[in-house]
Image 1 (cartoon, rainbow, N blue to C red):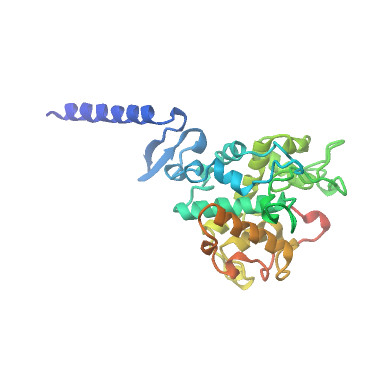
Image 2 (image 1 turned 120 degrees about the vertical axis):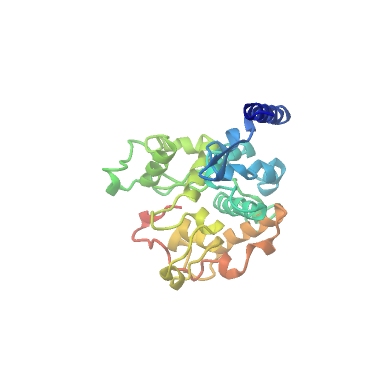
Length: 321
């Protein structure tokens, strides 16, 4: 067979393979593949759009499905909840799709992927819970009860940011979202990243569940400072601690995600309840997802009780949680 005939046959085989892939799967999630500098890169349609090595892996819907989301947040639509009908699985997946090509829920083997989703949602669940000791289903079953701070004590306008993130007339920058956003400068920075005018319209976060999840995942994936890890990097092991980090008892794992997100409002204070509540959500979610809490690691990985904060607070307005 001549060379050009071989090429033609191979081309026909490739076309047939692609057609079969489209015919057998959802045309909106067909995995496209190409090689870039010797590395396999993929684009998996809406859920993992953007050529990436991570899109070649299982995406979140392959291992985390609606029934699991419902188990984790089983009381969120109870009549006494404050955000009934707001949060849902589709909103979470739609938001996650914007970050899966960056490694959110697509890094490593299946167990690590599931652990990252459990870790992220543990922060979400604990920060939006209205559970208490004798609540039906237990205090860990009430995540996503809120989508906003119910009784704000102030407007959270920091005038020292008037040249970069000036407070809009009449806007209130109280806590909103899946990982609640506070203060004008945090709404401003989040809005810039997501291309939404959150500085002038912070209320968008409590009106759109997908946007609220997007803001939370962006925070999880983004370092507070360029010289520091994101919560994602600290959790999946992309971050290599420096000698100073080691001396400050900061290392890869769940504990450091709390340090990154909450700093010394939570960490370096010993074995306090507010820290343990978040850890308890993580362990509970691991069990519900079928991973098992034994995969969480030892206490020094789970806790930030002895860690020095990456960014020590200097004033009440330093809170970014």
